[in-house]
Length: 390
Image (tube, rainbow, N blue to C red; front, side, top):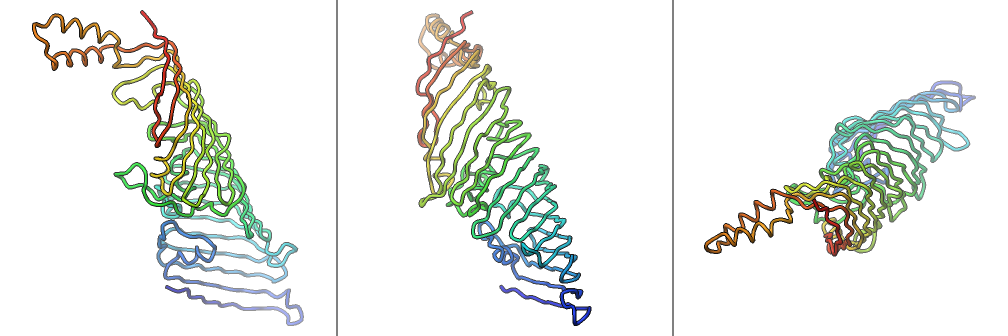
C-alpha cells in the first residue's frame, strides 16, 4: 500500500512584489489504506483497523502576505472531515487561522476501539502556531449528544485541556477506550486480550467531564455526574467524581497507570443514602437505604486479568432495610411441619421452607458490615444488624 500526491497551482501578480502575489494551490493525496493518514499524524487505529481507501484534498487561495481561504476534505471508510476557513501563513507564531470543522459518518467504534455507534461532530477551530483551540464543539455518538470546548498544544508532548458535557455516557466504554481495552465478546463479560496503547497515551492535561446520565454497570445509572480526568503520559485519573444515584450520592476516584505487565488500577467508591433497590439481587428485592465505602487496587495484562486481580476492603451500612425472601419465621414453620408429619419427608419439608421464605421478609432497622475484596469478588466478611420486631 502506498501514498500518491498531486499538486497544481498558479501565481498571479507583480514580479517585483512576490509576497503580495496571489497564490492558488490544489493538493490531493490518495492512500490505499486511509490508516496511513492517521500514521502521518502520529496516530494509530485500535487493533490495526483498516480505514479503507482514503483521500485528502486541500485548496488554498489568496495573497502570500495576507489572509488566504483554505478548504479541505478528508474521506475514508471511517469518517469524512470537512474544513473551511481563513488562514495567514506567516505570523509571529507561524501559521494562524480560524476554521469551521465538521466530521460526518464517523465510525467511533473503530476509531476508539469500543462498542459505539456512528456519529457526527462540528467545531470552530483556531490555530496559532502549535496551539489549537476548539469552541462550540458539538456532536452525537449514536443517540447521545455532547458539547464542549478545549485546546491542544502540539509538541514533543501534546498538552490537552477542555470541558465536555454529554446527555449520556457509558462509563465502561469510556474506561475501555482510555486504557486501550479490546471490546469483549458477546459471550464474555471481560476481554482476555492484552491492553493496547490507548488514544490518550502520550498526552498531558485535563478534561472536566459532566454527564446527565452515567451508566456505571448494566442497570445502574448515576445522574448529574461529574469528574475531572487528569492525563499524564503513563496515567489517567478520574478525580473528584460525584453524582446522584437512586436518591443518594455516589463519589470516588480511579487511577489507571501503564506498567510493564499491563495496567495497574487504584480506586475508591463511596455511596451514601442510596436506595437499596439499586442492588442486583435478582428475584429477591431489597428496600431501604445503604451506604458503602471500599478501596481497591490491582493490575493485569488484560481486562479479565485486571478485574480478577482486584483486592481491597471497605464497609457497608444499611438503614430501614427489608430483605424479601428471608422470612425469619421459616424455622418455626419448618419445625411445626416436621412435628405434624407422621414421617420425616425431606422433600416436603424443603417445600414448606421455600414457601415460608418467599412469604415473608427480614426487616433490619440498622446494620453495619465489613467488606473484603479478593480476586475481583466482594464479600461481606461480618455484619452486625438490629432487626425490626413487630
